[in-house]
Length: 241
Image 1: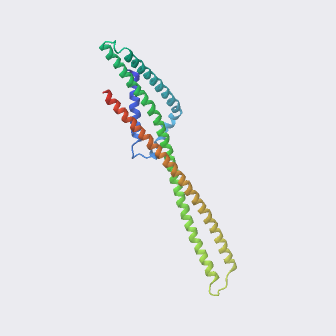
Image 2: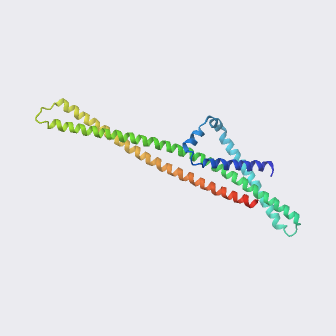
Image 3: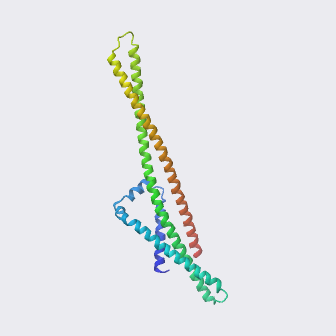
C-alpha cells in the first residue's frame, strides 16, 4: 500500500473511532456540547470549513482515481483473459484487487466524513433543544405554582368578602370593601396573566419536545447507517483477507 492510501486508511480508522465514541450512551448531548465549546475548538473553528472542504476534494479525487483503476483492470481482465500468461493474469488480478480496496477505503472515508459532520451538528441541536425544554419546563412549573398561589389568595379574599357581607349585623366598612375588591381584581388579573403564561409555556414545551424527538430519530438513523456501513467494511476486509 502506497503512502497516500496508507494515510487514507488511517484517516478512515480515525473516523470510525470518533463515531464509535459519539455512540457511547453514557456521554450526554449536553456534555458533548460543552466539549465542543472548549477554547481549542473555537480557535480551530475559523479553519474548520476550509479544512472540511479540502478533505472532501482530496477524497473525491482519490475515489475517482480508484474508480478509474478498477475500470482499467476490469476491462483488461475481460479482453485479454484468454491470451495472458498465468503469471500476468495473476498480476492483473492483484492490481484489480488493490484498486477495489482503494475504492472502498476512499468511498467509506468520504461518506463517514460527511456523516461525522452531520452527527456533530445533530448533537449540538439536540443539546440546545434539551436545554430549552428544561428551561421551559421550569418556567411552566413556576407559573403553575404562582397560579395556585393566586387562586388560594383569591379564595381567601372571596371568603373575607362573604364574611364581611353577612357578618351578623355588623356595620360594613366601605373603604375596606373597596380595598378588598381592588385586591380581588388585581389577583384575578395576575391569575389570568399567569394562566396565559402557563399555556404558552406548555405549548412551547410541546413544540420543543417534538423537535427533540425528531432530532433523536435523525441521530439514531445516522447511527444505524454508520453501523451498517461498518459491518459492510468489516465483511469487505474479511473477504480481502
